[in-house]
Length: 209
Image (cartoon, rainbow, N blue to C red; front, side, top):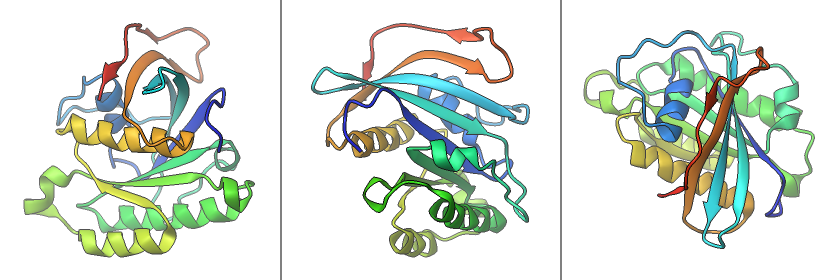
């Protein structure tokens, strides 16, 4: 995908309770508190500017989707055609959430309308790594082998480590713009699809990551 596209669209998918919203909120705003109870997501959309080393701004739109049923992870088909990239999130303490991600990857491959050379970028997050010593069910070696086979970029993350999350998004922005570089995130706005009014607004210089 060529750099300079008007807006890169990134779709977050995963089972309920895997932490999709927490990851986005912590990365963009740094306001998530571990243990915070968040209402179930229907669909939220976040927009951000990514500042590259060329001093060019790339616009991103993040789609935070509803948590899926692990037994039948049905995703509205339009997400598969709209996404330039997909972030698949599972919980390392719940095996069934990884099975959900595996099914989602198969659906992405099946439903994407893009040519091979423009295949969507797929990033997988094994979330809640801070619980690995007490509750881990999914070992990283198993997921790493899956990621290599499926051509997925895999990282283990936790919302307690914001820098790790930001590094992953820098990788994603660099991959989409085809330019290996550092980047900064500058949040522009957040709005809910079901409301036409602006629910959040913030401006300011992008911070170096």
